[in-house]
Image (cartoon, rainbow, N blue to C red; front, side):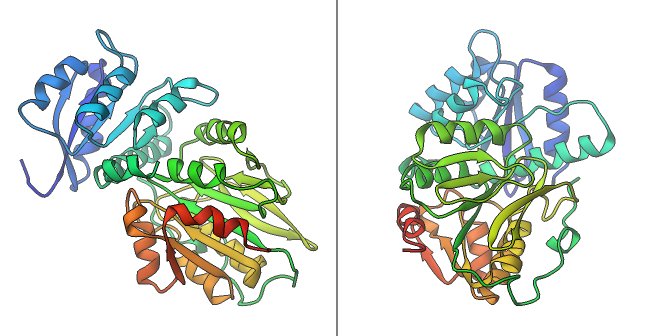
Length: 354
C-alpha cells in the first residue's frame, strides 16, 4: 500500500455501499481504501492491526450504531471521521449529534440518478474525505467530477468600483472543513447589533437549512438559510444554501442576496469565490471578508478582488484552523491583510462599523 496516499477505512453495513464508496475513494490517486467493515466491531478489530488516516462512517448499523462508535473513538483514539448517512438531513437531531461528537465532515450517501448527480456526489465525497484526512482532530477539539472553474463562470470580475457609495458595512465569510464548528463559535459570540453577514460554508443540499436553524436557536443574532431576494440586515446572518451559489447584490443603498444555479466553481457550489467576488463588485471598501478553515483554494481569488477594491480582509491563523488550506492559499496570493485566531473573529466582526 502506498505510503503517500491517505488510507481510508469504510464502515457501513451495506455491501453495495461499501463497494461504491471503495470505487469512489480508489478513483482519486491521493487516497486509497485501507479496509472496509460491516459494523464498528469489525472496524475496531481492523484498527488493531493498522490505523487509518480517515474513517467514513455510517450511522445506522447492527450491533453498534455509528454515533456510539464515533463518541467512543473520539474519547479513546481521535481519528478524522466523515459521517456518510441518510439520517442526517435537514431537521434531524442526528446532524447536531454527529457534529458535536466530533465528526469532521457530514455527507450524504451516493444515490442513483443522472450522470451529473453521480459526478457531483463522487467529487463531493472525495473532497470531504481528503479534507478530513488533513484535519487536526486535536486542534478541532481545542477550538471548539465537479468542474474546477473560476468565479468567471458565474459572475464577471469586479470593475474596481462598487456599485454605489454607502456608509453601510457588510461582512462576508467563507469556510469549509472545520467551518461548522468555527462558524458556531463566531456567531454564538456575536451581540444582537452585529453588522449584516453573508456566509458560504461548503455543505450539501438540505444540510445548510438544519445548520442555520440550529445556530438560530442558540445565537443572539438571527441566522437563516439564504433565499433569493432576502435583505441582508443588521443583526442577521444568511447562510448560502447547499447546491446553489449565493451572491451579494444591491437595491439602492440596501444589500440583498441572489441565490442562483450555476456551474461548480473550484469544485464547489456554493462557492466562496462567487460570494467574495460579488462583495467586491457591490460593496467595495465597505466590505469585510474573512476566510476561515478549509481544504483547497476556494475564496482566495475572491478575497484578493475584495482587497483590490478597498475591502478589509482577514484570514484565520494556522494554529487555530482545523485545516489551514483556504486561508493559506489566500495568504500566498496576498489577499489577507491580517491573520487572526478564531477567538478574535467575533470581536472584530462586532466592531466593524462602530
